[in-house]
Image (tube, rainbow, N blue to C red; front, side, top):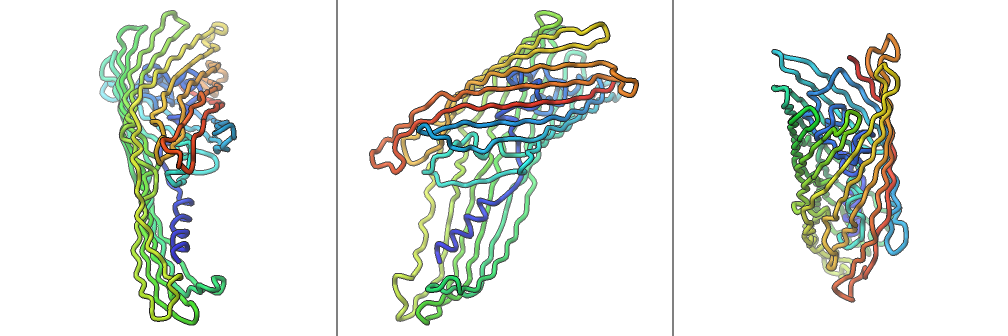
Length: 446
């Protein structure tokens, strides 16, 4: 009976779906920005500014639409064996709508990354089971943001907005007759009730044009965490050896999934030449605030065994879950990007080439104890190209843009040595690489 109740709760945890921030943190948002290593907090005024710096929207030159696609493939291994981490793939959508009020330029923006096989995945594992903590559930999410930006001064842009997501609460009721000796003859009924509770977290940014060739930026992204609360009630009449006994169990589970820490970004963008731009970002990520994703389980059982009832069939009360603190550490992520542009003719067309790099030091400490959050440092190199065509037809009085990019990430092998020889997992190595590819088509009206 205990196993049956536990299985019911686990099924709910494993199948829950909700929404949160998307794969933008891991693989970027938009092909141009990803090709520049994400170092664009001071150099984004297109749809990607909805993620990198909403202040940049105020510099939009016209109504802009963008659509694109991203695919990321993992080759992450433990002890030389591929862990079959699920790929990430999905569509980009977004728009920027600029305007002017009382002589002050402003812009409204919407950004969306929608995975094409799920809205969100929650997979709760035992804390002793090794898992790639940063690449398992984290990228499998939707990203949806709305922002508003203004340009009160010629040299100053300010913007902010909200990212939307939802938390899940659910309950499970099971009633009926449970045949302990012949489970297939049991007659059980279940009822599931679940709802989503809206959650929002803020983001804000500022960009300063120090000169015509030099820009500085600062961005803040708020913390959020998705909670998954499951309650289960098992109210059955258990039969064994001709003895009927009422059995009542209450089980509650609570887990924190899709945690995104606070972030602060400081960036600069410099044009050393009319056709060349150099970007630099440094991001502080508050991983020390990370909440363990392990599910906490509590159970209360009401069961009184009558005389003659076999003691071996009396269910034991599950011990409460002891969750070990993850003890993640804050980190700084440096990013750099370079873009060169080649004019094509005299009509304003141009071809762009891009190169980017960033380094993410793993925030996960040595896993010498009872947890096995697997991760490694990450070096990522990105390449991209784009073409912008001006006034290609009378029906399109604006710029038509095509961008593509590829990113290769290498995670150097990391050895985890357990502090005790009695560890059920033992020592292991982990490392690998990640490929991501993307393309975006954009149309900007003038």
